[in-house]
Length: 76
View 1 (cartoon, rainbow, N blue to C red):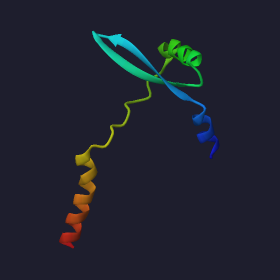
View 2: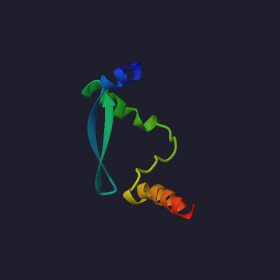
View 3: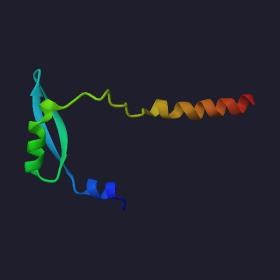
View 4: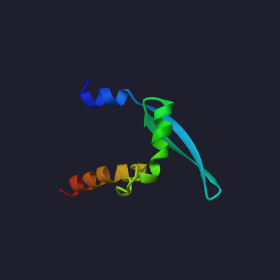
């Protein structure tokens, strides 16, 4: 087990729900304890924006490379 894996295994995910614009939303906070998770939630107002999260691959996008590869083989 690497050092990073060891550190990550010490953390659990604590779900928090908040209401925004009439809809409930949920966020998971990694922490060692519920008390630590609550402290982390308190400082979210100081968070910085690091860019948009990458999208999860869809079934159609996962098939595209294989289809392209098969087409290339047929034309060769």
